Length: 118
Image 1 (cartoon, rainbow, N blue to C red):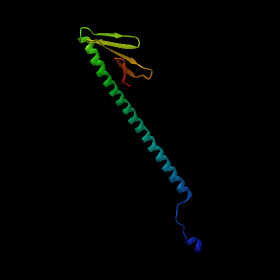
Image 2 (cartoon, one colour; image 1 turned 90 degrees about the horizontal axis):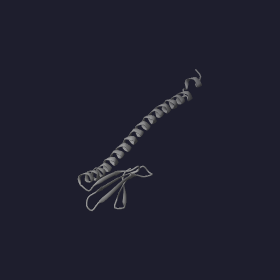
Image 3 (spheres, rainbow, N blue to C red; image 1 turned 180 degrees about the horizontal axis):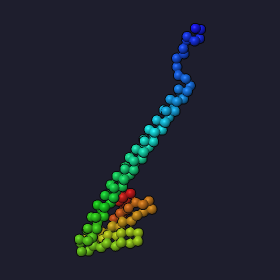
Image 4 (cartoon, one colour; image 1 turned 135 degrees about the vertical axis):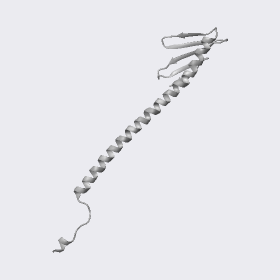
C-alpha cells in the first residue's frame, strides 16, 4: 500500500454539498410559501374584523337616529341620491349620512362631520 492510498481525506464531496443545498432550498421555499399563506389569511381576517367593528359602530348611530325620527311625531327620514337625512326631536336635530370620496360613511350633526365607518 502506498502512503497515498492508506490516507483518507475527511469531508464532503462537492456533489454532496450541492445536493444538501438543493434540499435546503426546496424546504425553505416550501416553508416560506406556508408563511405567506398564513400571513395573508391573518391580514384578511384582521381587515374583516375592523370592517365589522366599523359597521357595528355606524349601525348604532344610524339605528338611534332612525328610531328617534320614527318614534317622535316631528321626525322625518329623507333618502337622497347620495345622502340619507334624518330629522327628529324638538328643537329639530338633523343628521346627514353620506359616503365620501374615500368610501367612508360620514355622519354630520350640527355642522360637525365625523366618520361613522371606514
